[in-house]
Image (tube, rainbow, N blue to C red; front, side):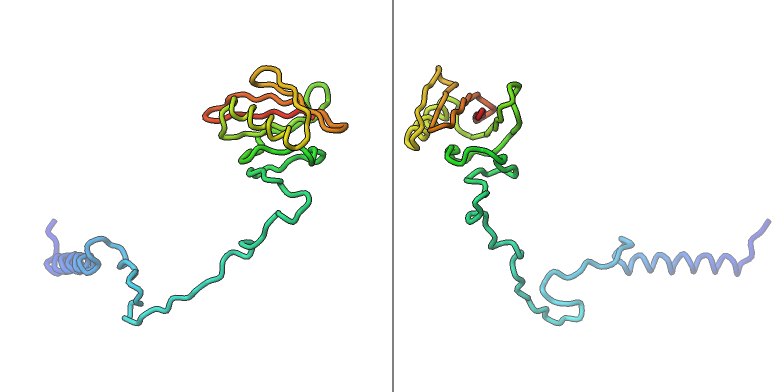
Length: 166
């Protein structure tokens, strides 16, 4: 069966129009890229507008009596944590709960070495008026008035963990 000459011309022309359309779009078939030069598509210079910072940028927990007391984690110290017990600088709450005997505990993570943390924290406790008794390099017991704690320091990755039972 032979095709009609008019049909061949129409098909050939529609192919040419499609090809011309692709060439006009840079051959990508996509819209042109938006301008990043500070000018609109019409050549008009766009104004820069200053915007305010986030609404909570000036908020702080320093005045809050239940604040985190220097703990730099998303988790805060649990209710009932002894307010007079100093926290090592840069420590963050890793875990908290109750031990098998029902006492509360908190595990703090630090970037300090285990030996360095045990020595520096024992010194900090003594400066704050705690009586400290060390058992080896990793365990200490401390007391101040009616409060007594037991703490264990263990290595953890590049830093250490301080488990305080109170």
